[in-house]
Image 1 (cartoon, rainbow, N blue to C red):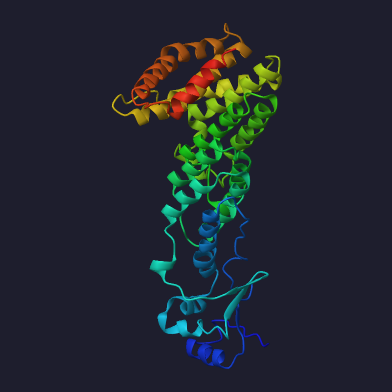
Image 2 (cartoon, helix red, strand yellow):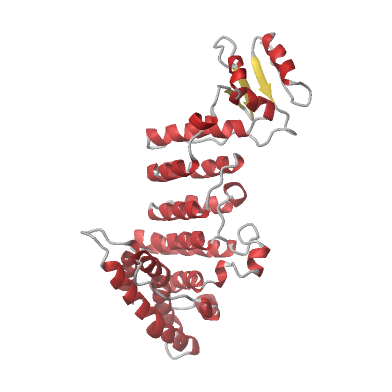
Length: 373
């Protein structure tokens, strides 16, 4: 059959309609120079039929229209043009990349899923490793479609991926930041990502494989903070660099000290523990170890922030020595600030624990308290 290519620079809408009326098949193509993006994001089958359906709906009703030219979109969304798309004997199609997609009438209100609810639903449904592989094309499709992923949504996504052992996919999400839009320059996102490294150690029961993998990840994430794609020059100049936050630097110290104590005979090869300890103390003036007694959520978050730093300093002193300038500085931070803060925060959170369900800040604090060598 004949193929009809339509370029908006060559035809007006009335001309398109006349051409369609005389075409046995109606295939719309856009030249590479005019195509907004490449082919559509591709999803792999998941463990959840509901998740498969959600991703398929986004692909058809959100991502596909975003790849079309304005004239082609008018066929989808304008009711007066829908008759051109509803003839089963003459389907209207568009070729994007190597795929041919059939066009169907769409309504912005009834056919396009809500971004906020859909992200929450997708995160709830992603449980198996194969499910998480779809995060990257989903995020890239949202970005191409002009659907903004808010900072708190990226934070929640990083948390879920860390909790469910998908840190490897999270690494790829961050490497492909230009397409996914998930940046480590967002301090809360950066914390959740780094906490995922701590989670890997806990999930592996402190195995050598798990700890070494967590160290590789956290060193890589730390290095990404030097990339303008994650932290731009304006953010650095204004002090919005996660590397200036002592709790973030403390996470780097934590993994370096833990790995060397557990599987490095307590030796600071390469001086990396000392370097990280010096970085923590250099930005220690930026700390906020206060706890809002009336807000158990704040107390829980402070446990997440400062428990790894407390543990990092305890472990680092064992590597570097107690009776050194760094060792004494960290001891002061531990005894005068971190331990009182953690005890206070833990007490506040404990009052809001119901039944056997504990809060993740207290869970982490208790888990790390067991590993004081």
